Amino acid sequence: MQDYSGKWLRKPQFLLFEVVGAVARITLNRPEKRNALSFQLLAELRDALLEADDREDVHAILLQGAGKDFCSGYDLTAAYDQWEAEAGDETEGNRVTYRPSGGSIDNDTWAMERNQSIPDLIFMLHKPVIAKIHGNCLAGGTDLAFRCDMVVAAEDARIGFPATRANGSPPSHMWTYHVGPQWAKRLLLTGDIIQGREAAKIGLVLDAVPADEIDEFAINLAERVALVDPDLAATQKRIVNLAMEQMGMLNIQRMAIEMDARAHLGTGPRRMQFKADMRDGGLKQALANRDGPFGDSTIKLRVDR
Image 1 (cartoon, rainbow, N blue to C red):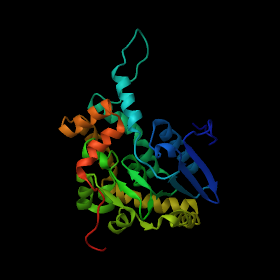
Image 2: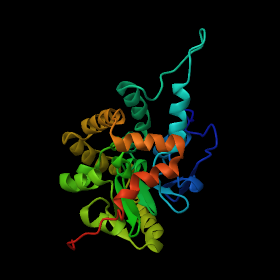
Image 3: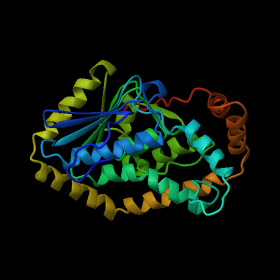
Image 4: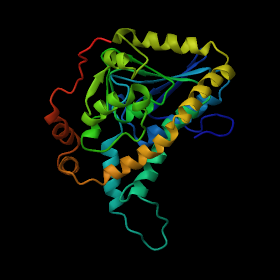
C-alpha cells in the first residue's frame, strides 16, 4: 500500500521496482511460478504502477518479467484452492462474511472486475507503459500486456490464451483491437499459441527481435519515449485512448468480464473434465488433458507478411 506521499508502506514480495534514468522498471518476480498472477502480486503491481505514475522523475514505465517468462497467466492453483475454501465457509453467529468469488454470475463478475482493475489502471495511467514479452505470455499475462501502450516481444516468445479451450474467455479483450475479428477468432476459438515473430506480422505486438536483443531493444524504446515531457506524452496517450473509447473499447471490457462469468457456469464435457482433473490430479494433469488433443499448438503463417 501507499500513503498520499507516494512512499511504500511495505516492501513488495513478488515484484521489483526501480527507476533508471527516467524509466520505471516494474518486474513481475515469481520466476519459480513463471510469474503466475497471485492476488498479492496483483496488489503489489497496482501499488507499483501508481508509484510510477505519481513520481515526477518517471517519464515512462517498462513492464517485464523475471526468469524465463513474462507471465504464465493467473495462479490457477491458488484460485481453485480459494474457491474450494469459500465453498466450505459457513456463517457463524455474527461473524462478518464476504461474498465468494464464484457461485453466481454476479459474484464471478464482481471478483473479475476487481482483478481487471489492474489492466484497467494501466490503460488509465498518464505515463506510457511498454510491455516486454519473453518466454511465455499466456492467459492473464496477455490481459496485462495488451492493455499497455506498446508491446514488444522476443521472436521466440509464446503468446496465447489456451484457457479458451475449456475454462472461459479473456476477461480483458483487446484482441480484436490489435488484430481484427478474423485473427481474434482464430486465436480464441482454438487457444493456439503464436510466437513473437508471427505476432508482430499480424499486429498483435508492435515489433519482435531475437531473444538475446529484447532487453536492450525494450529499454531503448522506453528511454526514447521518456525523452518527451510527461505532460505532452500524456496528451498523446490519452487522445489515442479516447479514440479507442469512441470505438467502444471500455464497453467491450465490461462485456468480456460478464461473458467470461457466463462461460464459467458452462457444463460442457471439456470444462467439467478440467475441473475434475484439478480436483483429482492437480494443475499439471488438468493442463495435459486439456491441451493434449490439440497437438502442436504453434501457429505457422502460410503467407509472408
